[in-house]
Every structure is written in structure tokens, then in C-alpha cells.
Image 1: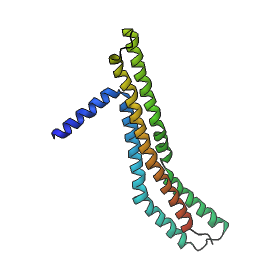
Image 2: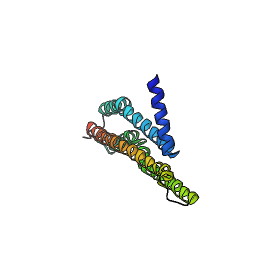
Image 3: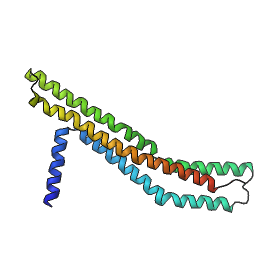
Image 4: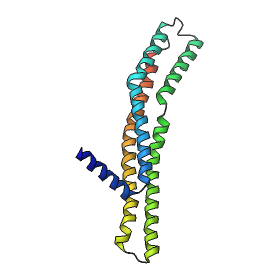
Length: 174
């Protein structure tokens, strides 16, 4: 229990050093990861049910050659494709926003540095250190957040693309 208290205090000190922008980075990171975990869960547990039903329904059709059958196939593939791609754009947007939020932290930290310089009238490094760390920590944190998001969202996107192609191949038109 003591370990958790010390961990919480070190996280709280880190956030205090980095500024309030870290709360925004944490919120974006949390939402991004919740969405990525939800997408992964859907690809593993929800989509296989949809896939199996579509392939079974297609195989059960007596007419797979007509113009109407081809349009039905295209509509089913399009519906499945939409379900596979849900929230992927939002995930990619959050990944792209992380560095911008970090830039906001950089700007607010530099404003703090300039404020110290304006108030004291000197370039005292000790007084400016707080603002400099407030400028660099959010940038570092947001870059780490974006990198984790880039890697896993790319993997999700590749999986979605593979599943779309697998569905198209599993519903042949004769």
C-alpha cells in the first residue's frame, strides 16, 4: 500500500511540474486507448459473428450471379466494412492531436518563463527552471502518447484491412 501512495505522489509531482496541460494529454490518451481496446475487442469477438453470418447467408443464396445478387453482396460488404472502420478516424485524430496538445504545454511553459523574466527583470536560471520544465515535460509526454497510439492504431488499421479483404474473398460471386 505504501508503494501505491509513493507512486501516486510521484505522479502528482510530475503533473505539477509539467503543468495542467498534462491533464488534457492524459484525457486524450485515455480516450484513445479506450477506443483502441474497444476496436480490438470488436475485431476479436464481435466481428467474427458478423462475418460468419454474412458468409453463411451468402452461401445459402441460390442466386449469386445476377446483377441484384452482386448489389446485395456489395451492400453487405459495405456494411461490414463500415462496422470494421467505426471509430478508426477518431483514433487517428486523437493520435494526431497528442503532439498538438504537447505544443500547447510548450507554449504555456514558455509564457511562464517570459513572465518570470518580466517580473524579475533578469534571466535568473533558477527562477526560469520551473517554466522550462513546464515547457518540456508536456512535449515529451505527448510524444510518448502519440507514439504509442501510432503503433497500435497502425496495427488495428492493418487488421481491419485484412479482415475486409478476407470478407470479400469469402463471398465469391460466380
